[in-house]
Image 1 (cartoon, rainbow, N blue to C red):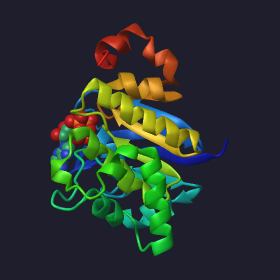
Image 2: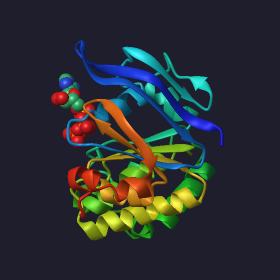
Image 3: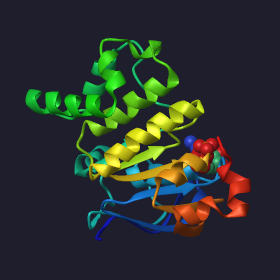
Amino acid sequence: MPELLQLQQVSGGYHGRTVVHEVSLSIAEGEAVAAVGANGAGKTTLLRLIMGQLPLSGGQVFFAGRDLARLPPFERVRLGIGYVPEGRALFPEMTVEENLEIGAYRASRADLRQRLAYIYQIFPKLQRLRQTRCRLLSGGEQQMVTVGRALMTHPRLLILDEPSTGLAPRVVGELYQALRALHAGGLTVFVVEQNAYAALRFAQRGYVFEDGHITRVAPAAELLHDPRLVESYVGRA
Ligand code: ATP
């Protein structure tokens, strides 16, 4: 399988302090991959480096064979990287459908309708809530809108930062069911989680991320049954 996302020795951080150290990672087209690690390991920083929200202090990021250096975040989105940031960041006074439409970059009316129909097929609940203001939604429903918004740009790769944070186990299950459906439809998915159980059950491969370094990569099923990892990150939430 060709590599869709490739990181070579990527480093970066804040104000001269390196948080992510020479991370190499690759995700093939069609794969579902998880990166798991403790709070503060640098997972969000790694995703900001991939998206171009932070400058690299070393290394290279390739998407579909193209070096992303100097491409601003919106150009990376246009190339096909969908990003679901931590914390949802919706417009609370706008409706579900308005928040989704914001994700559609210069789409035609026909394309917009087609994308909305697709998202409502993945998240039927959102169709029922389409005229509801986002501030009235539960945490799980808000997370669905955030994922839906990232899908509005037709991504080839969907990157999610801790999508299960703050959600009840049943809701986490629903969210991962939706990610399974998206992956089954051909989308490549990269999910970063502190609470790794759901992410590793979903993914095919997993990276373990500790103190800004990748310390292990293995089939997700293997990581799920590793006693040391189970104790540190996997839990049973
Ligand atoms: P979390 O689960 O808390 O999101 P994480 O693995 O995503 O953890 P990061 O958010 O990437 O970790 O943070 C890694 C380190 O970088 C931490 O020491 C944090 O204090 C620091 N850091 C994060 N954001 C900033 C910032 N904007 N300015 C300075 N330091 C930051």
